Length: 110
Figure 1 (cartoon, rainbow, N blue to C red):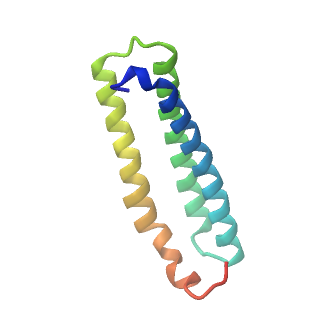
Figure 2: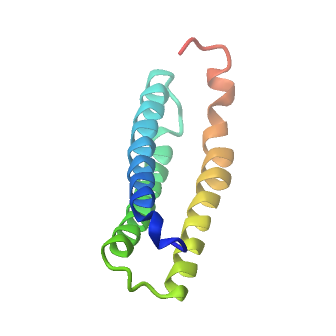
């Protein structure tokens, strides 16, 4: 967002990120169902929240792409939202939720 000449790349990136996240979460939930993961519902709720957060960021990015009148403060705020989302996803979700699957699927053929 700090480089307005790269708007198309930014839009493509956020589109692919949303698409890949949704596909990944669906695949993960199918595996959890297959292996009777006891925290499946908790994980689904976390996935739904992550998707909602991604959609919020996607909407901000689209607004920026369509209307370059975004302020430097909005760029910083959006950057902070992206950083918080990534932190939640990688630390809160992967380490605290997904790692619960480790023992269950250690020797599984997926």
